[in-house]
Image (cartoon, rainbow over all chains, first blue to last red; front, side, top):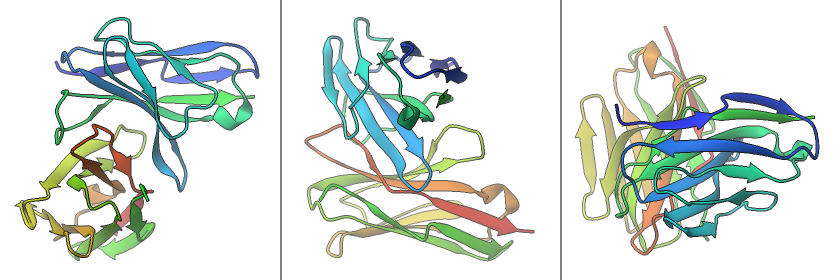
Length: 113
Length: 112
């Protein structure tokens, strides 16, 4: 089954404790991205990757890091989480051409206390 | 600018009525306009999309219209049903980028 898989689904952590949210897709998609969803703000892009070893900042990259060592995986790293990073996070992937559907993962609800 | 303005933020309709959600943009280079539906606790999923060389597209009870001159596009849902209740996001993309820019979402409630 074609899918984008995120882990964990839910996470509660403390300020400053490094964490990683994993994202994996099995569709051989070139393009992957991370979004955060906050009430009234829609989906805002954090980082994206055009292909292996090619990443770039989205609209809200501060406090986040990513890596793309393999085509299927695109982890999101929070080196020192803060409460303002409490949010619902989605990973998405799409074929590396324009005008194609973005497939989303199930989401990760992160709470930083 | 880059943003997509989406209205209304909430919409409540009686079952069987129609619902219309409108999005406006300013970047004339935009050429792809998808709509995503997000049910409660679920991931966003594509329901319909339209490309800039088309003015209207229909798929059963849903349709999208695009006015490139006025730079706005709309989602139309006819004969609404309770299962249409969800948050709907519009988005846009331009040729030179794979980046999707989303609207802020519309929470649609269909009352039985």
